[in-house]
Image (cartoon, rainbow, N blue to C red; front, side, top):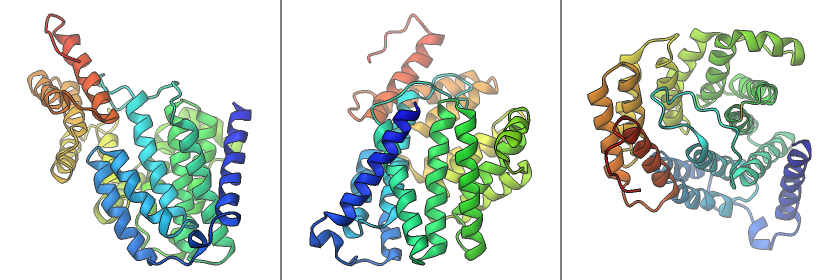
Length: 332
């Protein structure tokens, strides 16, 4: 695995070097758009992503990369889109406790994801060293480390997850120190604070191994709430993770969690994933008719779908229904 990670990092370095050294003149030309305009494009792509279409989102994020191949933003957002493809490919979406989704399964997207994350972090570091938009560069670098940690967490690799989380925290705190208006940083620091405080047995060991800083569960929830309400690029994902955390048995804020998922469904109505999330929450609370109805709604919305994410949801809800009603005949 160390060789694989080393190869991925070497691939990222080579890709970055080729982009900067061997690219044609039009690629190295000054960007035509401002960073603010890039973020407008990013929001358009993120709307597509949260509506359940990562491939369409990636096509939009490529607009940023074409305009400014040295910007970490396009690579960062494409990595986020690829992350969702990995999530749908490997996460357990059919268990009523759907929010616990670790998986050791590798996917064909892993190498692409790792390369994008490493390239985003490297480009952000290059901008920091060049004293170019330093605060936002720390933001993008920290969010890249956060994505890296997500994959490690999905694969149940505690030590690499903690190391990525520590790097994320350092970068995002620096971003907020330099520019407190970068509210998106609260997605990462909030997630860090929450989980470091709620995974106490593991964290105590990791603190000894890597000097992992402490966290605060309540502060983490507050920071996620702030990102969910005021975030520019991370708002929807912060709302998603806040809803997940509030549904945990140690929180038991089920009504608020349901409200957040309902908000996501209203904002991104083309994504049946929100129906699956709400259905799982209903089943967790023993509301079987409501939960099954939402699973069936997601099943009908994804039946005959051709996209990978829709097909993954179709398989998930089909299994969920058949597990409770094995006599039913449902098409794949």
